[in-house]
Image (cartoon, rainbow, N blue to C red; front, side, top):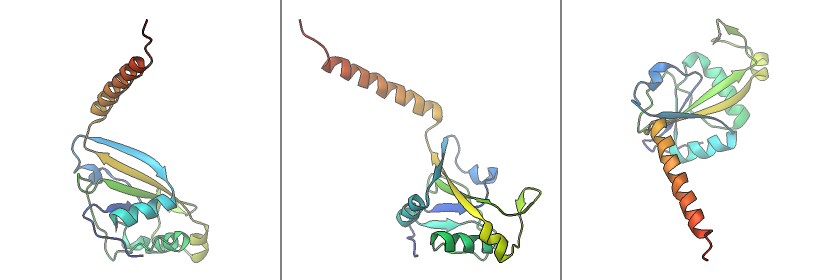
Length: 156
């Protein structure tokens, strides 16, 4: 699959670290588990940048085979920071593979990879702080309540 280059690509990684978040300043990050179909649409709209260590190539290949993502597997790790431009990150959760000190190993057999399962979590950065979003939501709710009470009024 060829994904577009939009300047607003979605990053895909196997882990989340604080260094990925240092470019965003004050804001709100939402987190949601997403489906494969959702990801395919997201990648088709915004493009995708894979930020995975080269030693995890086999895991990425297995994921590509399983879900037909067609993700490019990088030769080197692409470091990144989320920002106003690149505000979407998908973390691939891999279950069913042996780990050492909590980390994925650099090599797995075909049988082990066949046992791997994947889930996907999307992180989205909003430039508005959570408190501002809550305040805006309360204002909209108040205005809606006013509109409803006006429409439901009874004239005597």
